[in-house]
Length: 302
Image (cartoon, rainbow, N blue to C red; front, top):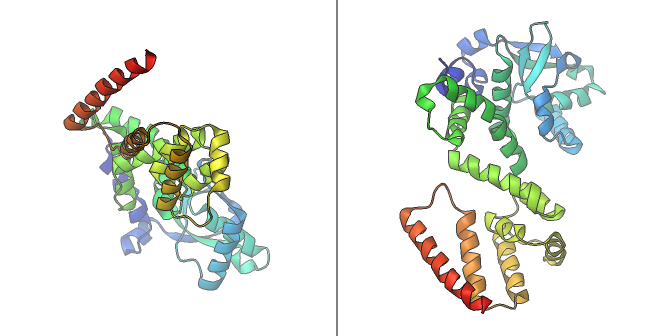
């Protein structure tokens, strides 16, 4: 029977990448020709920006390879990258001018399934790489299939939220803690960025330069208005200052009572920071807001 702990027991990023003698024996380091290592198809979701690869190549040439890539040995004798795609591309770039970089030292792992390889790839990327909001969400969403498989095989996981199972998988694979709430928030944020924000604001949000409150404000606006707000925004604003700028601009443009604008801002802020189900007291407050709003709405119809 599988569980998150059993999956991680034999193969984990934190275990594979340490330098203990037992690890060196089970997962040896070999130098492999850079042309003999295939990229993992699941890595296509992550950025392989050319300028970032060039910067990494310069760093490797100057300081050496500080973190060994993790490579899977396939049944046909070939190799497939799991963790280290950008390092591999940096070596290939350096090898164009220096044959010393035509081979790259890698930690080798054998005997893992396709699903284990995918789990290792996404959990490694989640912490090892600097990801955008969308990439981080893709990593955790991709773990959903494995989470459902574990739930089906392990009765103790029945009723446990999928995001909490994902969080356990990531922590056991990397040794670094992340909450299920954080995973769920990032996945929701990524969907909003992709579907509700104009291109420029989406880039800002994806790079982590917008607060959740700003995203919540923008997502309800027409794309044309979002673009206008982006173009008129002063340069160099912090995340907090951008949120205040958006609130101020929309308040000035709104013809309705400013008290209602503030109430809407507070409700949007509350909704954007929600983590899980509202408390009983909050639900009672929401019910009262609904009753008051209904009374005002009737007055608007008359």
